[in-house]
Image 1 (cartoon, rainbow, N blue to C red):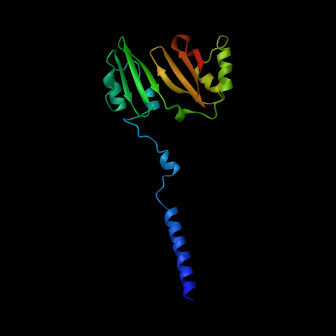
Image 2: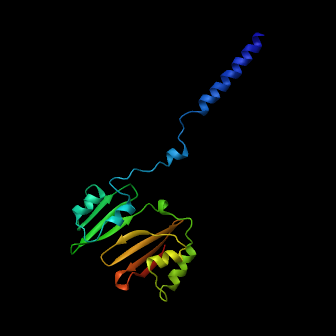
Image 3: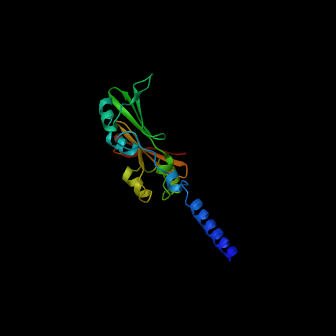
Length: 182
């Protein structure tokens, strides 16, 4: 009888030990992929959509929520939002050229068909597109505003490390003037 009781206690001890080890504080995949907190008032995409070329540095500081770091050798400012995203504004003649740097993993689109991008590259000398027409050509996949100036806007589409860029010029009534794939 004593041997039977010891066997029960031993089994019970093994079960309890197994439960305790199995329920430890191991980081889950969800915890490991925790988003990096954005410094400031907006994400990189929200910021570039709010900033206009005619805005002064003080206005950009107010939108983003902190002061930009001035580059020593030019009239350019950088707002580092996360380790992988930032906004840059370079001023010439009181107008800013605005550039957004995205975390390409976050804007990667599995729906994007890069073969359509190659078609556009090959056809751009014969046919130009507005941004809306290009989104339609890409079967509804929106681009991300990457840069803007007083005369143009550039959008980026990303698929599995490849980037498609298109620049839309105000002088061409919003039509695409330059495309590239890398």
